[in-house]
Image (cartoon, rainbow, N blue to C red; front, side):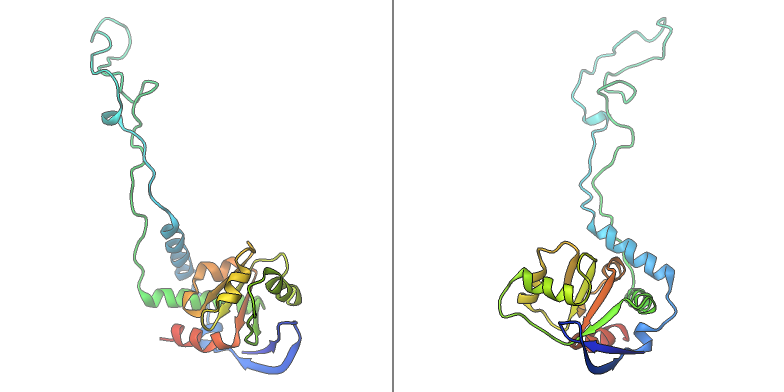
Length: 209
């Protein structure tokens, strides 16, 4: 699959790159994508939720009324979940939501996500760039040139670049990652995926194993 390379001004450089069909041109596996996204979201959960059950409620332990003759159900504790202020039945407890997926399935999911974006013509290849200083307006200018202003975008670098990363950090709809930090969720969550030329080799190497 051939894609034209553009510069930071959004103009074609006259060069084209070949995107590997093994990474960007496969038949997407929807279930692998589902599992990888589910794992990503599960890992974001803190799992610190907690409510008090009847054994943890502070309250009297006396029997609140006699067993028989009241015409209502028997009750032995004010901490019972059926009373206001009592413990919660089967309330949430702290837990770890993470679960394991094997590496091959995760690679398949990322290849599927990239293939989906390629089919939607939502992948742009841009020549490598950097900024001399950290300025949000520099990154905003790149977004404007690429027609991505106000849209969710994911920029993939070949290696970490602090000036580019920090320049984008104030923009809620844009995210900058390196090729080793790619995730299925981030790819699908973006309206457009912008790949720097230097990231292509790393992506294809990581996902073709």
